[in-house]
Length: 221
Image (cartoon, rainbow, N blue to C red; front, top):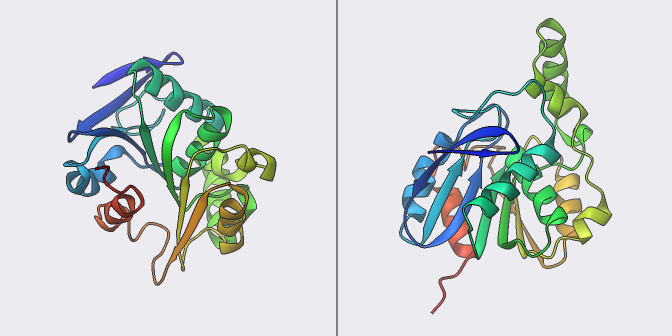
């Protein structure tokens, strides 16, 4: 399916029935990484698997800003008139979730983020160096996005009213210090560091993240 928000055509897939769960992938990926998780979640949630602008089957754009991508998700939720929304974001999707919940208090019922960072230098230095070299050799606006953004303050995190689960692997590419900074500054946030997991090992084409989402979102009676 396609929808136009902020003058950009976004592609999304809908899986399952139940309360709405919006799922946003990481940099350079597409909604397809969530197919396995969505299948497990489909009996509890209507999963909206959205391709961010410039990703997957969504419209390409010349440059990227996390604030624009967060506003895309806000307009998407409003356009589909979704209520009682649970949000899940991985990596860049997690950054988008933090900005979304900060800018639009009360929009989300619950939020789960994995491997998000609040500043560019919280990402593994060797990885950042690789991106700098690749971007020097061949300009890539997605690499440039990660090298210059985000810049999320403690004040922004403290403004988030949504009950939030902050996830990261013990071997994540994001510094654990920054993950803890996120969890410590969001009111009503819970933190879970997953032993032995990397940045994407429990998420991309995996069901473990779905189990964590279900654990955080107990079924209403």
